[in-house]
Length: 379
Image 1: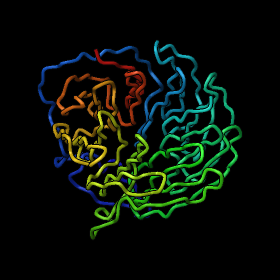
Image 2 (image 1 turned 90 degrees about the vertical axis):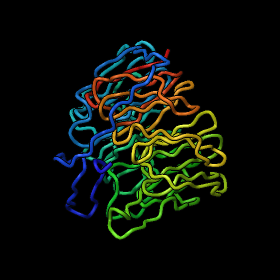
Image 3 (image 1 turned 135 degrees about the vertical axis):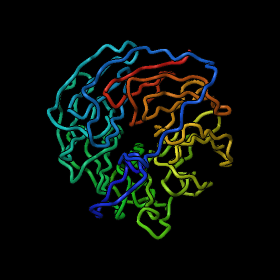
Image 4 (image 1 turned 180 degrees about the vertical axis):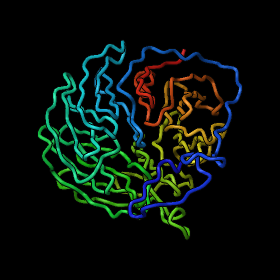
């Protein structure tokens, strides 16, 4: 997990025994377990998208819009592919270092640069529509509604831009803790409201006309003596499922909230910096220790837990049909039963996966750290 640490005002931290630094105390990933495969993984297509995310920790998440899938690489390549065939529809080289995932909506695609720019492209042609300079970087994928594109910056600011012109409509600024994870959550953007998790452990609902706060909830409270122990962060994207918002937090809780009145329905002590998935009446969580847990959406009771991927640096879970899938940093894609969490299939990708995967029509779209985009299904 410490590969995600970003010191906001602490210039250096001495850490030992963490895999990001190497050495003899390096934590080894759990070995792969043997099992009898019940399903077969089929590669519908794959294609290369630039050179991958680059040396800096970047989550280059692909995006889906209409019948296209969009992906970007750290070296400035952005490309669009037909979701079903993998045929490349267009490719542009922006000649700038990209650091965030792709946002897509309203016929547009948005990517972010190391210099803090948002670049908007036409989703059909790749033509550049506008460029907006922000006050800091955007490392998560921006989100759209019919009028706005909303981006969450690493300095704690959320900014809403006119989707057609790139002009700022409003901004919201939150307080930043001294130490936070490398990355931010992606907001949920509806027609009237934007819902966002913050690095200070809070969750806010913002009015889309003015950016004013409609309500605010504390999801994770700082506890402990050291800066590391007190670090709290809502870094995974919240999940809206059957009119309830489920919010993960690091060194905190998973919380279920009624978005209409901000009432907390339940909370459970689970640490996660990943986005959530839902299916079969459960929500699925990739925990900070790389265990996977299924919770009943109504009661928060644990339905099952899968611990055999510990220390494999897994991604957020995704649901495809009756299966649950995560990828890991060692380059494997793992499929589990949604019913009890047992393994049903495994596939070796060319390299590891860091960003979230996407799913449409039971097809999983995964962008590897070497820049290869896969479309996979289960038979």
